[in-house]
Length: 115
Length: 111
Image 1 (cartoon, each protein chain N blue to C red):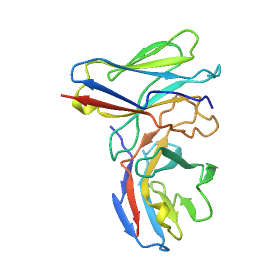
Image 2 (image 1 turned 90 degrees about the vertical axis):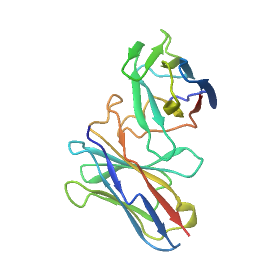
Image 3 (image 1 turned 60 degrees about the vertical axis):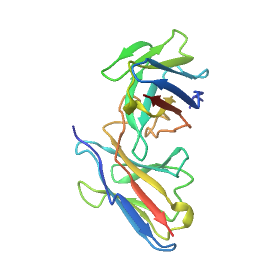
C-alpha cells in the first residue's frame, strides 16, 4: 500500500535556527497538507497546498513558516527562526481530491524539539 | 463545520465490541461523517466514512440514524492493538478539505 514518508523522524534544533521538514506524498495525490500536534494536545491544521500554491492556512502558519514543492515528489515545511513553542510532532498528509470522501493519508511524523 | 461531542475516554477488554458515539446536532445536509484513528506517536489514519445508514469495512462499522445527529463507530472484538485515540469529524470544511480534529476518544483496551 502506498504511504506518505517523512524525514527526519526526529529533529533537534536550537531556538532561532531554521529547520526544514521533508515529506514525500503519495505519488498520484494532488493535495498536500501539514499538521502539527504539540505533546498531549490536538492535531492542528497548518496549511494546505495545491497546484504549487497555498490554498488555505491557519493562524498558526505565520510568516515564520513556508512550504514548497521543490520537485515532483517532495513537499517541505520550513520554519525560519524556531521558537521553543514550535516543539511538536509535524505530520504531512496528502489526498487525491478535496471532497469529503477523499481520505487524507498521513505520514509518520517528524518530532521537532527546539531547545 | 459541525461541532462534535464524543466521550473523552473509554475502557474495554480484549474480545469485546466497542461502540463510540459521536453527537453532531448541527450536521448539514451535505456533510459526511468521518472517523480517524491515531496510535501514540503516529499520524492519524482514516478508518471509515459514511453519510447515512450503515457502512462496514474490514476494520469497523459506522451506524448513522435517520436524523444523522449522531453516529456510532463500532469496533468488533477489540484487541490490545486497538488502543488509540478515535476522532469523529463531521462536515469537512469544504474547499481544500482541512481536517479539524477535536480531542477525540481515548480507548484503552485491557487484557
